[in-house]
Length: 177
Image 1: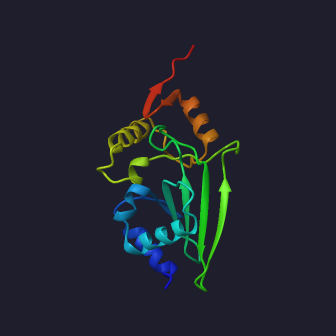
Image 2: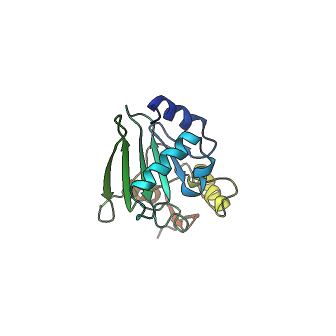
């Protein structure tokens, strides 16, 4: 039996790991086992829809009228401070027990979605948690994370305007010439 969207919303709020946003919960594949059971079941079923794609993040939608999850691929999740989305595989859980799926490719997009606050998407014992946490902390101190910044161009403009750059998981000042 499919979970109601109310159960999905509650499970997202109750999750002990994951980045909870207004419209969705984001969690790394390594954290799926720490999510409430209803979300684990959704991830499992979504993964069964396409087991060929290599995904590393999930997005559980909280504000829709029906349960929906996306399996996301951020190939540089561990190596880049703000990795870009390569593709998303959207799975809509239909009331008749079926599913509807859509694959969206982002590799050729001019302004791809990027990630911030990655430490929230993993557990505290994830092998790169400290690196992720330290980057977020330095960006917070620099005042870079206020407002909406989910796309590459807007992020790069913000960094440039404030005189910063990010290399790997390190924030640094750009010297003005």
